[in-house]
Length: 246
Length: 246
DNA sequence: AAGGGACACGAACACTGTTCTACGACAGAA
DNA sequence: TTCTGTCGTAGAACAGTGTTCGTGTCCCTT
Image 1 (cartoon, each protein chain N blue to C red):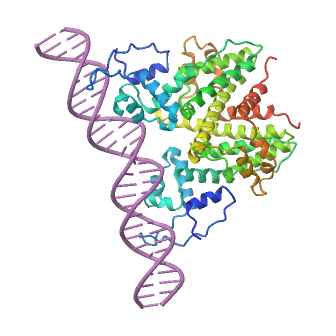
Image 2: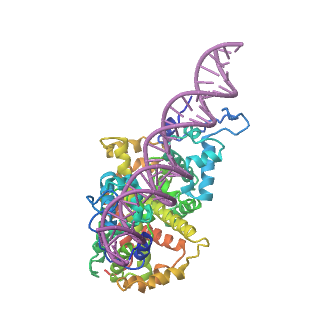
Image 3: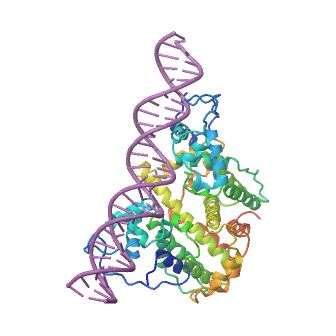
């Protein structure tokens, strides 16, 4: 009846966890006037930090400070920073809505799930770094994979192709979100106004030596499109390449 | 005639740098019996460290220790750790062989370049993390993009699709290599013999609750294939999706 | 021979994740 | 009521990290 964080983590990799009853008030030496530290409280404040300051600002000390305590207090509820990352990704994946498979519109459905993932990742900048590192055996991430697999199979995609395609799609969504987050961070850092807009980029491409003929020639195409356009293009590329129904 | 590291870095983003003449012997207080510290020496030892111990072991102190000096000595040649990362992936990209575009076999040529990148990334485990974070304006990475763009254009791919496809391909190769490196590291760490082979994985999939019907049903497909198979599948998916010649 | 500039280096600062140890308040038992 | 034990809390500390400052030492030029 006293689940250590290690046990909780092990359970997370085997079965859906039942919610643990939270104690009423904090019991420690600081008196009972503060809210107790729970895993949910840690996850919530962690999400807030990442949303406002980015994933690189997510440190154990930062979370602890936001909870008015020291860093060591967190280790009674969380195994690791790696464990905290996994919890964050798990909760993020748990919020993804998986549609009922419809064989006539499975391509749009897949694209919709990918867009959901992308938007969640971009809402918490840099968190996709944790998503790439997270173990694929996590039950919440596996739930999303299961949902995508179901969509592909309903679309008549060959099981082997469907299995590999889910992997490829989630991997690309992760990488894409991470790259966008990193670029945004770089822009924020180098320039307060972060307006290194398309014109500047195209001029830099045009100023390249002649060793880069195609890059100079097609600078417009290389810098074209909004963030969503590039994303939709690649997802479409992968989905349309799958032989399936319709 | 006294290029600070910052100037060197700026030059790296504008023109191909000419090789700087290396001094003969180290001049510092430690006497002249040691090799001088050059950017090339730093890059070389850094590659050695990553190759043997992985990217997470690549710290400024580790590089400095391998060169028999202190960490601060590196900052006369390198702006940052971020700068060092950029130098590494620049040199890695410089070693990629770009074939002469052949309109009849452009798909194989693209796949070949991607495989080259993958093999280089996997040779230095975890270095793709630096590749994702690296600025795309680096001249060496741009050279690879230029080469891939040339191949796609020679294949008759629409310029807009070709531009976006190069981006998608490099991004996927990076992410794939990073994921493989991370999984290998996890396996190395949890188990000395790192034989959590396919049977174990399939049993864990089979032990899932019934909420994951497709994952249980197609556990074989999900765990099938060697590392190269999954990679080739996705690259083929993206390349074959591109409308072009042949 | 004297000066100057470039290079190298040791120590230190502000961080990070993590662990050890003690403290204090609540629960139940006598 | 008093005592005892457990459990969550928290402070201090350890081994790391990237980075900077000031000093020292050498070689080359004048």
